[in-house]
Image 1 (cartoon, helix red, strand yellow):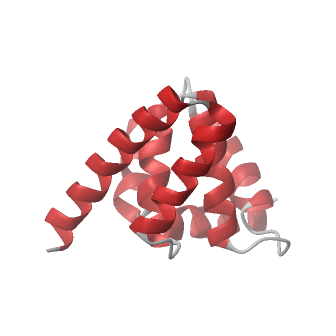
Image 2: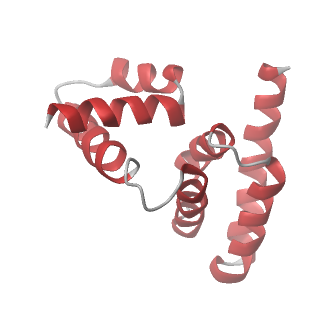
Length: 127
């Protein structure tokens, strides 16, 4: 089990960045420590490490699911992760545009707004 946790933490840091993972760890308490352990082991250590899809494809699937469900904070976080996984801003826009057909125009409209904000902030910090 320790390997799954360690693999999960490694992938989580590679995809989301050290700063995000450190913030999540710092805000964890006894109340949600088991949840942090669960997502590290299973989402990141068991699913994101599987060989069946590359990280770019996993990012496309994740962005689409988060759009469909309207999980905007997570969507913004995964826009940043998608860039770290090699998707271009244009490819992220294509994912949102594709989602407009299957998830609805209002969802895509909000998705574009969230993604634009994240991508703009990344340009400002990355220079």
